[in-house]
Image (cartoon, rainbow, N blue to C red; front, top):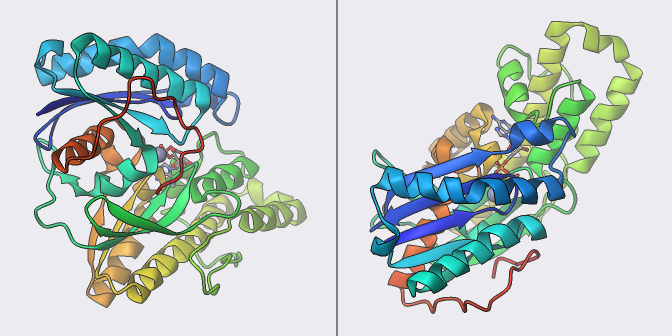
Length: 341
Ligand code: KG4
Ligand code: ZN
């Protein structure tokens, strides 16, 4: 089975070709530079940029995969959640392609696609579910922070999510307070490497809360007040590195502790993580340390599949078709608030 998948839920225009679990191509056009000027994603600009880039990105993916449109067996696209106008561009284009080729169409939940991205690995990247284990999955990006129990393939239950800001948003907003460009996550990661994570003590929100929800806006506020009271700190490069390391340590400790605790409580011995923040090196190494300590298997999405991409959409669509899940109507509409069932 050969699938063309399209992802346009936020600020990445992506198209992938997946065949029998193998990612033959995963073309991604990032809009980061466009939105950086505004300090965050501007929905109207994102939609316009998707419109401009979608067809070239699809052509690139088909070309890289050495596939023709006629060889496609199905077409998939992200149906939600995401920015309405951005979703609309990719979803309607995918339906039109499926209609023209008279092939099945599959609408995919963006979060559900993230859940299975840690199972894509190797060269060429291949989704391998033969060693699938029930797992606790952490989805952590600029828009979402969730803990999901994945009991078996295509069966999952959301345990908790953020009640305010996402973890990536916290990286981006605290970075902005320090004068770093959007998105600040990668810069904080880099600067933190030479900083002291114990230099400043920031709160670990909801760390000791019995539930699986997160909250990151209080941490951001405490950094804001801290900088209001210590403005001179931003004139000292080493102090900025210490600040980055301290903020990062607070975010990472909450994510790691709550993930491992939820895995234990739900009696699963495997943890997976995906989403843009999973690129963070401290998060990757602390998850590895904690899982090693518990004797858990850890599967982190490859960095190229952490940020939004169509490969994970194609992999999930193929898995669904293989499991006999019905395809999606060509009249179906986008679902910007689509929940992870
Ligand atoms: O998954 P993604 O590309 O887009 C969505 O938000 O859906 O994630 C982007 C987020 C941004 O908040 C960015 O700052 C964060 O991921 N991020 C990182 C790192 N790389 C990306 N945060 C911390 N450390 C990183 N290395
Ligand atoms: Zn995402």
